[in-house]
Length: 346
Image (cartoon, rainbow, N blue to C red; front, side, top):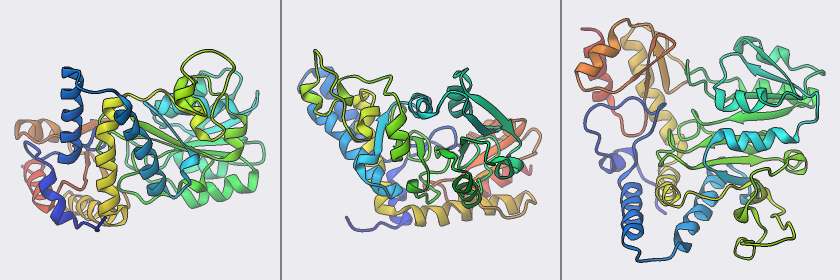
């Protein structure tokens, strides 16, 4: 597959106006949209069986593995981050102490808090690394925080966790797609695909290390978690896959059909190119509102009334924690940034 420049890919999206809200949901590229519509039409008409829809799940798993630099046998699939994290945390022993940022998104936090057997403690983000000591069994965190856009100090977190022996559980949802990530650095890396991976809602991934896989209970196991899925439709004995697929949840076919072309396009463009593009736009916006450059494609700014002005202008952004949140991705360009600046400065 030949590499693609972002400028050549720009025509694959057709936003109705300026859309700078990828941190809420991403826009599908045309190949993903077309594949999804074709599958829905086939479903509506009853023209086909399901097996090729299922193959889109396996092909997506393979592309995701390449994007995050791990072997495909390390990747499990599901529909949401929370269900996949829910499986991962079963690998923790009773009484395990888990450190989590106090602003952590609840899809990571709640699967921990619901486990009354765990000692879950929240700390300010700035104190996370210092809190990882020899008494900590695991640290769970987002690579990029959804509420602020803050990028975690991954090197420092991994170093501290390695020194203490703590498991690392990383939610990469707000990073993967623009932020280069090596999933092999973490015991578990989970990601839903409907934001920066520009896929339909309903597809998610988790990568797992041996110590997670060896201890995790596949509590949502069904036929798709079987060693041979087509020989796992009915009856005992329990015959789960030996690899990470044992944590799989039965796939939502149509969402996976739309996910595969989106992932393939990201792979073709390359996350490094997207990273440079997205940061350049985010920092152009920061400069326009008097902020210093930063390392995130998500920008939160204290701009009272800006959201209402943007909405009236047909521009889609978000408000989180009382601050305007813009998020800049591959389908945005400098004209989008300048139009948003024009409105928020008015």
